[in-house]
Length: 169
Image (cartoon, rainbow, N blue to C red; front, side, top):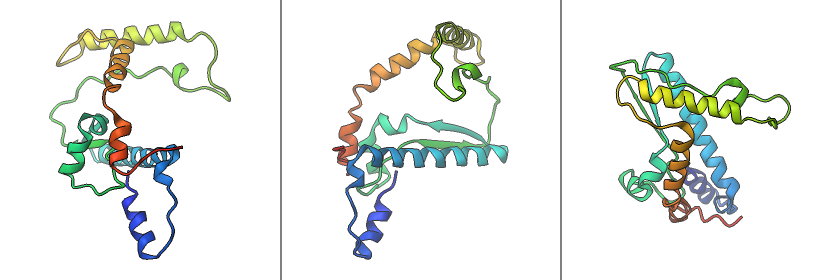
């Protein structure tokens, strides 16, 4: 997410820049823009026969170290990374959530999703136990909730504030 360039030109043109980076919307706009850029690059790379691996963990693993390594100015923070290369292997495709859990018509699904969620959770368990390469006993729910639990210690808001995104509203 990069607000450095707009701040640079605002200063050069003597335009008063509002405190957009101090709002939740300012952070969200930067994250959405970065995610859209990542997906566009991913699709372009894969259309050329290249392999890709989105790296969401880049934003949380060590945000200060990454910012320092990349010499990022204030107003810029890493949202995600993307590894692009020539694939050496074609790994098993991880099952995606079924359409009925992802696409709703005119309103969010309000019926009992538990049976569909349990079915997907079991499918992920079976995939992880039988996939090519490293196998695990991870299910979907436990794995994701475990990540959320771990992420509570990342202090992402503190890292954002040190990058110039002091969210107040």
